[in-house]
Length: 419
Image (tube, rainbow, N blue to C red; front, side, top):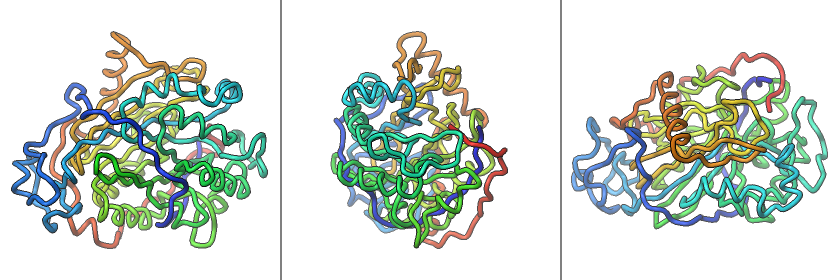
């Protein structure tokens, strides 16, 4: 059930338009998982010194006053709330719910888990194709595809944008990928991480919330070995965005950094059912943070991994399943990561826990929720991440200079497909 990794991408244009959800206040803090920034209310034109004392240990960053390249940049000074969920598909019982009523297929449970967010994102673990159509099923154990009604379900649940950069994004072949692009465009719904070439596949989703410019880039570190060449987006080939053409991914982050108040990267990464980051996740997270990413999150392992600070940036190595047919404990632990961010400053983050039943995440309450949060916080132990922010790893040099390494090798995983 494991999948080997590798894909290719570039920098260019996103699919679909961008809706923004309802506004919530700054994210609540979750028992030592967040810290404040003194004086963060200064506006875009303020100098670094005028923005207050900043984070403990924050070193000066050489950047023009008023530039998003400054690690202390707060944009227009208003907090924005982001919600990130893990894997979603419409196989099994979820497919039956979708067929019965797309508008309510996810909304009652997923909707509560992303409520109050300005932007809500998840991984769409499937090809998006025509009704009952999979034009070119790939030679895989697991082939997931869903009809255009899936967009109705996601939108009704309050999801703003999804990534299809994953090991099921092209389950229905090149023709299925073309359908995904066309369906997303016709619906005006953002599906990122795929494209007619590498440039389009790595184009960020962009939106403005309370005056803050948000950019999110999607890419994958996971793809079945025998499908790597055919599924890889290149300058001349449609496909999925890459986390292994790291120079292109880093360049995409650097470009987004120059014109965005907050930059996030959503990755398909990790090793299936492994609750600690693998050997390629940690160097990739560090490279993306140095390039200017404020938030790096992702899914694929179907279990939760730890979250915390890498310098002043927030990293979550595994969001687990959000809505999925799994019934095994660990894989049924669900929820959303709620992040409050003001420009580049992470005001706070917390986990909204849920437990999957009949494919849907049921939000947990009371002692069960407290136990789930405690279990989730404990996962940080093997990540190398911190419970409190430190100085920024990014500098103007690292955010503007051509990436020269470290160079990540594809994982030597057992052959086979992954759900």
